[in-house]
Image 1 (cartoon, rainbow, N blue to C red):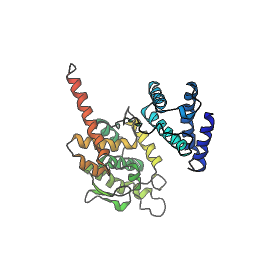
Image 2: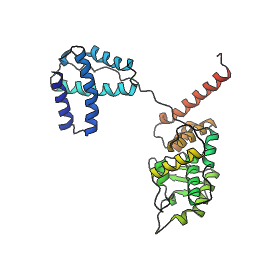
Image 3: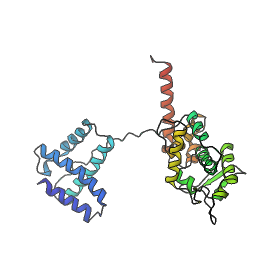
Image 4: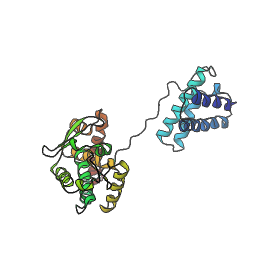
Length: 294
């Protein structure tokens, strides 16, 4: 009997909602597990799967150690499923109405220490074309906090070394100041490497690969991974780690959240406030280590 409800719902997702195969499969997986739970409890008619049953199932998922995100996704599936059944007059009431979605705990971003950043930025050696380019890219990324997608999209006209700023406009247009180390690294790359990397013709893209083509995200990922080993950094390192480190270190050194929000290009201050939370946690750790009895 329960299979009939499932088949009708899956057909609706495919034929009326035109969802992708992967999305339908995800909904179906959650639903199959829920209906199996109902059968274990001897429920064969959805009319008897009331709010208490739904709540008990969600609590059961939590007790089994499922992540809050999994429980939240399951509830979203059940909301959609029960809403469909009610619209088709297969049930009289929707038991998911009024149920709260479990709060998904946000993980704080990984950041590097100042010493780790220094080791990473010192890893590329300006002895060949690749060294000049990699040094410039890493210095620029940490000095400005721009996204990797913004870094590889930079054009020659976007950077003004004499005035010490770059123009970034792929997501939210902004002008970001450059530090003198980043300015020097980019100037060295433009003087000693980029002209020789241009194999044929001209391109306005600032950073090139060794074939003279614009750098790609995948190419930059490889650069980050290789220098992680050279710098002996134990924690996980992604291109975004330098962006997080840029923001956290600015806050540590007295910059205000609004300025950091502007430089990062966050449309909402709440996205930037995560770094303030990180600083609070760090202060707590320092205090507890200094005062173990506190």
